Length: 297
Image (cartoon, rainbow, N blue to C red):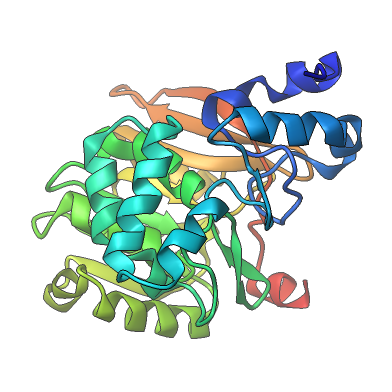
């Protein structure tokens, strides 16, 4: 079996832990393309044969793309969600059973454009130069925020896009909690609300414990602050001050930080207001920017 060149092995160590794929250069959550040519194709193909969680398959760069065939002709969305979650569980992407339950409850197929392979482990374009994250990134972020998504807690999803992760937050914090999505593309906000109404989070939207708003996510959403959990779905050049201010003592913020080279950072606010910051893994997200700059691409 060919050996991975040492520069990549050192850089990619966190990716072995989380099974983020070698071959992806999509605009979300992946190894920076400048490093990709150092990984020999022979290694990638051999790796895919020996590793059941390999990103490579006949369709290219998807962790779960092998699952599409068995579920494309029969079985509803919930069956496909269950299979997707089981594969993520086998690959060690998450550890919390609560994460498994919520990802099985909220059908990802309701939150992607028609005709999109919803259960494939890849980010998908959703229009307006935006994407919905790959399932493994959703699972990882839910797992990182699990302790801060307990019933009765408040959660903010910045760059809520199609509404999928916001709906997951809402189910986890329950009717006694508060889940807020903030998105600066009005058309996506309208669509996300329609998606949520079709999902098992619909009752939470109706009763008001779940809401989605048009706004600049870099400013957070102070009306329902402070938050126990804040997730940001786009990469900021630095951590927005407003989000730190809206984080409750004891709360956690998960955010990709950087420009071309990015890290998924986990920020915990201690009871005295001081911050603990650590890097979970290297990632590649679309930039957290203004609506105008995003639409210009």
